[in-house]
Length: 145
Image (cartoon, rainbow, N blue to C red; front, side):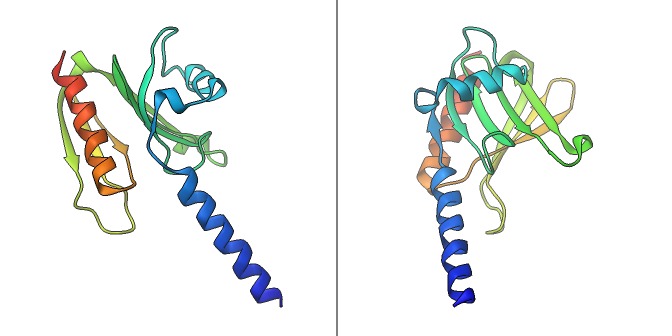
């Protein structure tokens, strides 16, 4: 009985995580989510998210691009030294590479290299076609600059 109940709860949790972690357009994001990202310093007042993906809980992880920048954040609630908030304005990007051939336990990602040589990864997972479209759209935004 207890094992069956645990299995049901575990299955529901996995379904929720899978269902909640999808690529969203900026128009699908509630105001409190964009306000949170602004508080992290990753959005200017009139800047709009074009596409967003979280590979965990929204408050802890986000990967997105706007008309001005590409960004990611990882907020570690237990160890602030592991918190990462990264972004690059398009004009500061030297190169961007899409890495889609990853082991099944990893997310595909964009490797962003700034002109100063520093790098960061923007993780995106989901249906293969949706991931490719996210990557292509982000690269198109960068190419416009």
